[in-house]
Image 1 (spheres, rainbow, N blue to C red):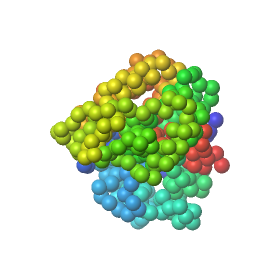
Image 2: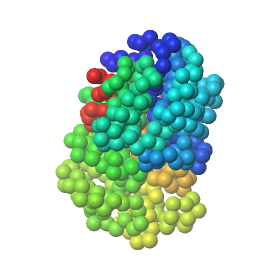
Image 3: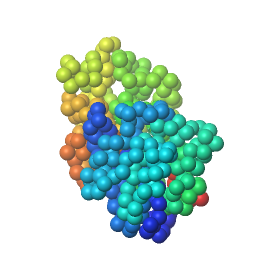
Image 4: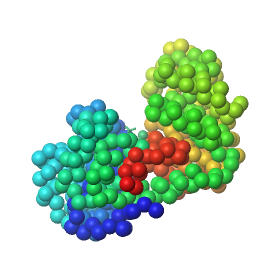
Length: 394
Ligand code: 3PG
Ligand code: MG
């Protein structure tokens, strides 16, 4: 078992916690604070043990330069509210303001650094560039705590390079995620049904190769469905679609057993992503040229729910549609409902998917495990080595 914060002395120590506080925003409002809440057990424990806590995270994809749209300031404010204590937010990552805030930290105090991705070194592919940034993050720190499970599949400076330079331990969130998700890498109850959706298609598309060999059925919704529909020769209108993925989808469909990959047979379409846009349900082979699919249709939702109902194990990542807008939430709701109706081991993964189930009023404990990681949980269940976990083990 990995070393956790229970195995290290933290009193008086400067402890850098890499959390994943990448929450969905609606303007500058936090649309769902699930990831902040998920980081509380570790942060509250470190504080109560008298650590000097420095918490860091990314937020969104600002592209390596400061962009106040992606400032962690609202997250710092929400964290302060949830912890019931002041969170010092110097608005800086490794610069002089952060340094002096860290120097001024008292035992039990907490500083939050600004969005790590405001510095392009955080996500650099160049080991030296990341390493230099990691040196600066690690310099004022006695101990590193990995608790940002949702970002542990990223070989980023704060995830991978800092723990190589510091005494490191896992936080409670990472520990709980690993324990729960391991159940999907060992012997699993079949049929094993995987439901995939969401908008970050490029990130997750590679998973199909492996899932075809592991899962009995793969139900595909959200923007993930469009490359497959296109591969079947269907017209996808103005739906989100990366042409480069159509070839890969064609190969996956050939590789899969007949019926193993299930696609939507109907969709809710509209001319734009708007709650008040005129919309209708069309068959998957009849998407109008000027319209986009924004949810799976009712027939598909019923088929997916039926497949989930016969599963022995279920893993779900990625909403079925634009659930944030009520007219396109039914497919996501149907999948969530079918999972909570099931009494087998169910796992829901991802920042957006977790936000979706909460927004639609489902209780987290109605599922076997709600993972804070989408891409991370997907890589974990494929048996891949997550860079953030690998760095903890060295
Ligand atoms: C997520 O939301 O999946 C994690 O926070 C990682 O974010 P990323 O996909 O932008 O690296
Ligand atoms: Mg995500």
